[in-house]
Length: 72
Image (cartoon, rainbow, N blue to C red; front, side, top):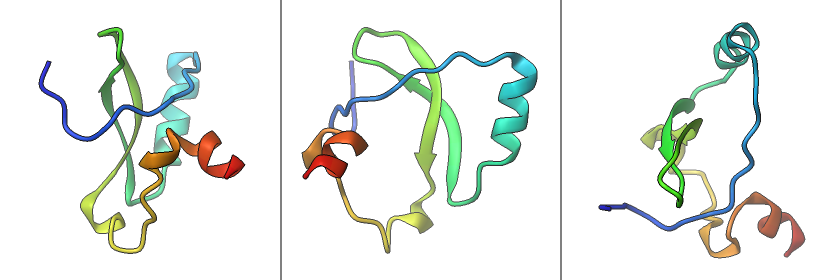
């Protein structure tokens, strides 16, 4: 599998189609929702960041995800 970047820990939630639609409509730019491929090969919808959001962002990849970053 061709991958860009590094693997990080994620949380997967289950929402009804209606609830998911309301949730997606509330996601502010530069965040977006896209299909992501997990390590086991399954696909889920998840957060991505548009390139304009990178300039002021801190790279937390080394912490393995947001939980590791919060525990630092």
